[in-house]
Length: 148
Image (cartoon, rainbow, N blue to C red):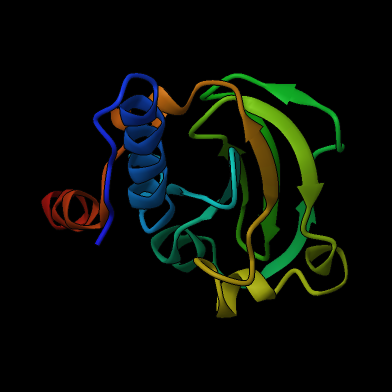
């Protein structure tokens, strides 16, 4: 159970920590089938959903972003090539690329076997964590899938 001090200054910091902890436990989704999770600090991992990989089919190549590149929410951050099609991956949040998943260079099929876990595409240092508020949680994303 978290205890938040009501003394000036401590309350705000404690509240921010609670918000970050809540967000770190959540995966957020877009209508274009990308996901984002908040990792330690202000790092966010981005990838594509199980639904997206299923629509693409067998993935044969992933074009990863460059470390240090800066993106706004909605920008194309990567592309995923399958035997059927090429799909652009838009980042759900803006930020600077701090890491890319090098496993995907040698094993692009990981997107088919572990799309929402091991097959993350990049880690971004979030530029504005309030962008997460515009995304869907798991329940809303599942409802969105059922409606389409």
